[in-house]
Length: 310
View 1 (tube, rainbow, N blue to C red):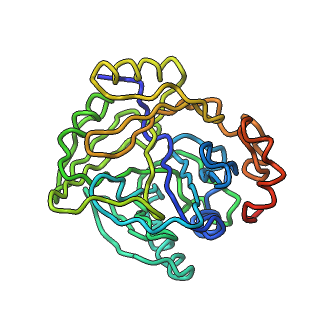
View 2 (tube, rainbow, N blue to C red):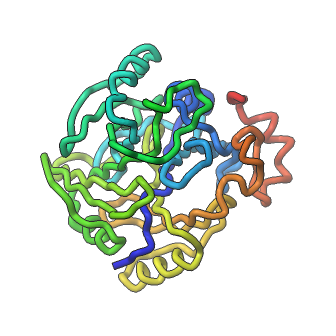
């Protein structure tokens, strides 16, 4: 069993509208934009990062807003729901706030005894807030939302799968332990995690295959402490027969990618160097930061990329 995985590092999704996505995360959810950069493979498209005040792994939601992308359709082989942690007693505040902001898909529910509030993102993304006792991660304090109700970071991610057996075995290899099961959902738990140590496996054998588009999760990344830990994970995954990419420098972390048995794209990302790698902590996410290989495109990109909030 691998011991290096610390929990979720980040989750990356796709959207249609950069401005609407930015407003939703900064104004409605009250997260901090910690990086404004571009897609390494499509530099005419933003890569936007939202997190707590310091961009702590386990709190980071990122987006590729492709202006002409079609809407995704829900199904098996994807991260179906991304859940955020909020303090106990906070869901009433959020339900009222979401109603005031016109957020759709609201539904109160309970899973494994935890109160949850489901809601939809700008493109129908599947989200939930979960009440958690004593989540000690610090929320972003710059959005006018009280610390007693503010989002702490990820609680969990729910993977929708036709058959969860292969992904369960993979997660057990990655240090997750099977927990309770209800209504076709198996909870996998990483003990001593970074606060984002839960993966729920939802078995839906009769559901259609998901089709990626706006509102779909592109990949889920798991955190490791450093390069040495990542290389150890990569070696073991390769020995187990997974086709793992070489290490790729993403400026704010180093990444490897592979496809899980249920079809979900997994990443393993290092915690360092972090989002203050190229700008001061007090000014995270304000300036357009470009990968070195795309710096020559700055003048063009600053004209063509849509304006988003300060």
